[in-house]
Image (cartoon, rainbow, N blue to C red; front, side):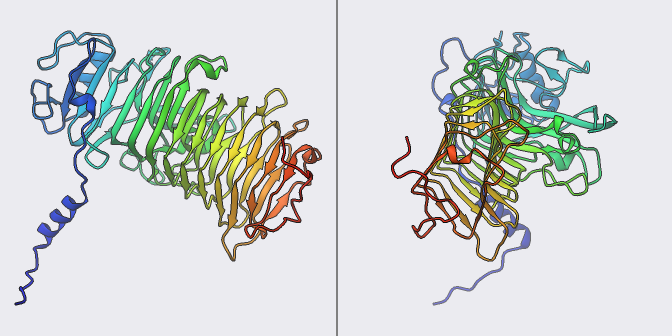
Length: 475
């Protein structure tokens, strides 16, 4: 017997479809195991319930930006407040467990590590040493920016213009190491805070600046970031996620042990300025004055996917970048021992990997660029760019392919961005490069100092445009 099919009312069908999209709630172990000695754990909800703050079923009231921020800022400011049944809450070693729902926040607002509240406000919150902020899953818990700081900037010619800025999660002091953020979506909310042709905004998601590292960002979605102001003047370039050493002196060893993993950075803010890419001048995940591991992340839609400056042995591996202008970019200050391994840069509109440049006083040395895949699919795009001062580095086992029917694309471009820069003593070995791609090496008179061995096309044949200059394995 056939059963009759009954059409569901449209509203009910929509509700059921919405429910099916939600993944099960996740629970961090920090939210269920006994609280470690010297730590405090609080639970915050978004539905207006004002409880004891000791469980997901009885959370504190974080239903507005003001309520949510007040809880966290009173703790990070060292006020030793009472919230729910918790008294004398210490500034450090805080575990924050967020229920499912959307939490509004004023973010870092005008807080500066060096100066405090620079605009005289009391808005927003920051995180302190050994804070842990956990949601119930990226499809369950969202922390959404509710405002920005109006500010004045200058364009490339020094003319002032109005704009705005904010960071959703930022550190309170230079000692705020050991921050963990997991299992939630961070929404910088660009499109909710401005409109096409409206005020240009720089809105960042997570900026962790400290003299020590030990940060862990994992299982997080970032959306709605923007660098509108940076598009007008690159001095104001912004970063969706940034691991940052606090001292001005370039010393990557000051900040070590941080990990960014299983993070998705997507859906940048729409263009405000005519001709702007989505998100403006924003890099998705960067490291500076620090050493960190960046792994198993996906960036979709931002101008630059990964990069940094003043880096030590930062390890970028097993990441994916698509719908971007640059897959990876490191073009300033000294960067030594960086590893790029097993990453995928899919159809960058301009460049896959860019390394080198700035001045003869810095070097990009000891790099290992190994096992990466760069797929070109835009006319004029280049897979690998060496801008000068790239030295004693290894490029091995990489695959550079090209979409059929697309022309004027380049595999390797080596040159000096300013006079006096050189790319010397590098190894190019066992790379596989689409034979349809050109090589742009004429602007680099030193390129033959680089050892080339067993670089082949995708069919395993010799590359006339990139012949071996060594009869044995490069050392």
